[in-house]
Image (cartoon, rainbow, N blue to C red; front, side, top):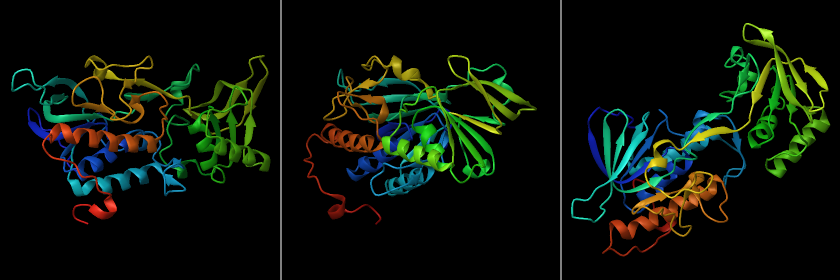
Length: 350
């Protein structure tokens, strides 16, 4: 994989894909199947987006054909799928500016993307697959939490094996909290799930399985409680205090806290490019083509918004195909596209 970003160099490509998460990587495949060269740009220094950076060993259950797949395994498969099309990866630097290329009067012939570090990419079309922008976890709002972060308080699980035999408190009520409760059953020595209410914002089937584990004694549901304090020395926990809104307190003798309260997202420079955004700072697109209000600029994945949008990886995969097919008549206005299934067309090099 080419990840170099030599200073003050320029390259040209058919399609620049901003974001190297799952949907960005699948966009490489869809563009490649239509004969387009792709350059993938991401602020992270490795491909994979949140799957690689935040939860590489988290199981994902809703990828067609995979009853269960680990996040990093999915990324590896997508990289393998994209490889025949020889994409160029520009990783480790954000896109700072996007300006139109107009070599012939007022016609927009593409975009020039300036990347931190002195590199620039000229692209005939752009697909923004940036998830929800630059991201970071919501930190625990507890006094002294910084003493424990990275040692016994974590917002990301890199390796399940690191938690083997540990007494683990999982805090949160979304998919990440529930999924990790399922994934760590039988690995952690003891486990509590702490949530302020008995309703979870997670896949119903996953919630059902979590309650089954609780009924079997594999974990304990601590509801309705919130984290109230941390005890320990040298960054290592000995106990976690939890409390209800009425002030009732409990102490859990724990070694580790996994806090899953969501991500803080920031679109960064994308917000300054003149793209139409909705109230949640997502990019509004035409659902038929994933086109934005800017010519030759498309958005796919979680960053794209339209009525009825489902924030699922598989939805992003479909949007990648829509965007690639919408780009074809723009780049090849005189060439008819005769759609073929991959089963009949094949893949280069296969």
